[in-house]
Image 1 (cartoon, rainbow over the protein chains, first blue to last red):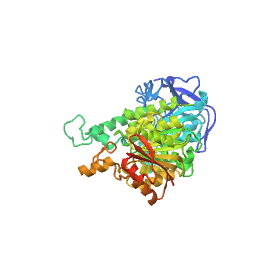
Image 2 (cartoon, each protein chain N blue to C red):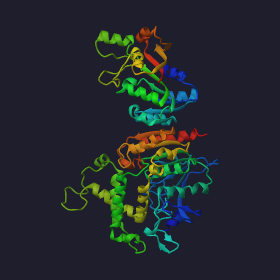
Image 3 (cartoon, rainbow over the protein chains, first blue to last red):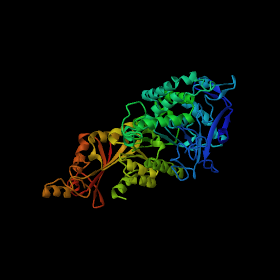
Image 4 (cartoon, rainbow over the protein chains, first blue to last red):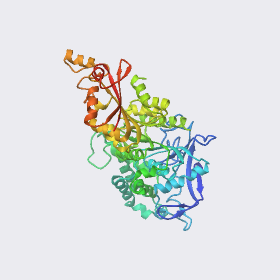
Length: 373
Length: 198
C-alpha cells in the first residue's frame, strides 16, 4: 500500500505556537484540492472536515477507495460547485491522513509520538491551515464552510482571520462544546483506553492495535449522529438474518449488526490516538469563553456574510446552539442568514442526501458569489 | 408587485437599514434593495419561504417575531416592517413595542376588519366573514386578533405610540387617513398602512 503517493503535503516551516504552550515547526499538513483557482484568486473555498473526516472531500478517496465524505455536497454542479470554485481541504493536525499527528515519529526521540504528541485545539488546527492561503497566494477566500467540528473551525477561522473570507457557513455546530458533547467524547476515549492493546498509546511501537476499543468508540458516537426516528424507521426491531431471537448475545437485531459493521470498518481507516486528540480538541472548544463570555466579540472585526444551517433532528448540535451563533451575530448587526432544515437523519444530515440542505447551500454560495464586489 | 408593497417602498428612505418581519418570499425586500438601495434583513417563520429568500440572495433568518426580535439591539434598524401579520400574534402590544425598540420607525399594515364587505358579510350571513383579504374560516385562520383601522388608531393612544402617517388602500387607490375622514376610511378601506414611532 503506497498511500503517501496520493497525499499532497505542505511542510509548514513557520513555527506554530500551540495553545498548550508548545511550539511546532517543519510539520506536514496534508491537503487536497478540487476545481481550479481563477486568475483573480477569488473563487477559493476552504472546507473544514469533521471529527473522522479527511482532506478527501469528494470523488473516490484514494486511501479508503470509498466516496469522499462530502460527495453529496461537493463536485461539479453540486452545492459547492467545483466547476466554479476552487475547493481546498486539509487534514487537521492531530489527524491520521498525512497531517502532523500522534502516529508520526518524534524527530527528537525517533519514536512514534503516541500520547507524547502535544494536545491540540480547534484554534491550533485553523492556525495551521491558514498557511494554505499563503501557499496558493490567496488573499481572501470566497468562503469557509464546514459541518460539526468543521463548523467549529469555520467559526474559529473567521474570528482569528476576520478579513480572510467573504462568506462564512457554519453547519450543524456549536460555539461551545456542551457537557453532553464532552460526555460522549469521554465515553469514546475511555473505550479506547480500556482496550488492553492501546498500551497507554504506544500500540504502534508494540505492533498492536486497539481495534476493539476504537470500534466501540465509533459505535457509541455513531448513535449520536442519527435520530431516534431515523433509527426506528430504518431498523425498528428487525432481526438480522434470522427468523426468531436466539437467546444469546450475537447480533440478533439489524441495528446491532449495523453498529458492529460501522465500528469494524472505522478501525481500518482511523487511528485510535488521533481519535483521542481530535475529540479532546472539540471538548476544549469554547469560543464564548475565548471572548470572555461574549460570543459577539468573536465576530466584531469581520464584515463577512454568514449563513448558519441546522437540522431539526440533530440532537448532538441542536438548533438552539446554532441559533446562539445567529443571535450573537445579530447583536452586532452582522450580515447573517439562518435556516433550520427539516430532516430525520440527525446530525449526519449535513453529510447525506438531504435535498433542501444541498439546494439551500448551493443557492447561498452561488448567489453570494455572483453578487460579490 | 402588490400596491401595498409599492406604498411601503415609497415610505422608506434610501440607503437605510430595514428589517422585514414576516418577509414571506422576499418580494418586498428585493424591491427595497433595488429601488432604495436598502440594507434589508428578514425574519420568516416558514422554512420553504426562507429557502426561497436565500435563493434570491436575501439575508433572512428563520424565526418567529414574538420570540426572535429579542436578539436585535435597540435601534438597530431605521425601519421595521410588519405586513399584515399584527393580527396573528398572541400579544400585539408586545410585538409593537419590540418593533419600536428594534427600529427607529415601524411600518405596520393591517387588513381592515371594519371594511363594509366584512361588516355586511357578518350582518347578512351571520357567519364569520370570508373575503378576498380574509380567505380563511374562523377555525383555521391564523388571525386571532383582527382589528379595524379605527381600533388601531385607538390602540396607538392606549399603548402610547405616535402614528406619523396613516394611509388607506381602497380598490388599489391610496389616500390619507385623518381624524375627519376616519369614519369613511374605516368603512371603505381594505388595508391600513401606518408609519409609527415611539
